[in-house]
Amino acid sequence: MIFFLLISDETALILIRHGESLWNEKNLFTGCVDVPLTEKGVEEAIEAGKRISNIPVDMIYTSSLIRAQMTAMLAMTQHRRKKVPIFMHNESEQAKQWSQIYSEETMKQSIPVIAAWQLNERMYGELQGLNKQETADKFGKEQVHEWRRSYDTPPPNGESLEMCAERAVAYFKEHIEPQLLSGKHVMIAAHGNSLRSIIMYLDKLTCQEVISLELSTGIPMLYIFKEGKFIRRGSPVGPSEAGVYAYTRV
Ligand SMILES: O=C(O)[C@@H](CO)OP(=O)(O)O
Image 1 (cartoon, rainbow, N blue to C red):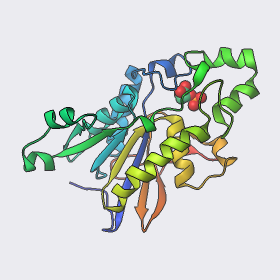
Image 2 (tube, helix red, strand yellow):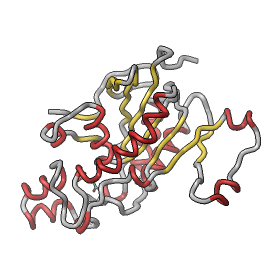
Image 3 (cartoon, rainbow, N blue to C red):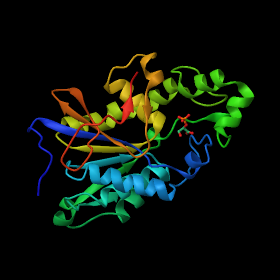
Image 4 (cartoon, protein in one colour):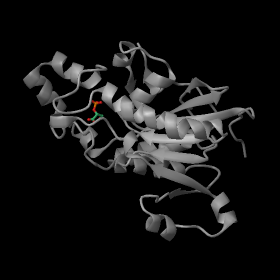
């Protein structure tokens, strides 16, 4: 069995935007509305899993939204190590107690999954549920593009990318970076904009550069974390290769 080669002081960070959702398909602004994957989205997630099947994963972080969670779980069905991803329930002492595992061996064969609302999609305010094309026709293409891609202009009563970054990047720094530093390989399944904010931080993009950063659904992106630095490796195209970039930075 071939596994992705990592030097001992390197850890892998996989980012994956969820597969196509029912509202992606209908071209509706989704934000924090909790919409599941389409059949195509399910297939994309499985395909993503094949691409990362030989990259070690010790911890999984997802948003609290079903489309990201479905994506992570479907991707892991393809993983060669066949460890069992298990959602952690730390929301109350009772939930923690009732979901305990009493076998060290079983623990070793599992991957903790942590769902965090901070990784949720940017809250799209009063655009949620509206058709993207109709909104562009009504408010003008430029205005809608600014709402969708600018760094600091929020959509009406929603979050700008900057506001989204304040929670998503803060969560990444506080909870995920320490795991990478301690030698854990991490996968994050999240959303177009919460991941754009994290990539902006990882790649040190400017507010201008992030405007043209677009993520495809269901394409995993690999980073190597080494000596406190993130090195972008692009998207593995198959179980034994790393190459094609999953996003454009024009
Ligand atoms: O609707 C949304 O929540 C997002 C992602 O699909 O839209 P956008 O393409 O504007 O980032």
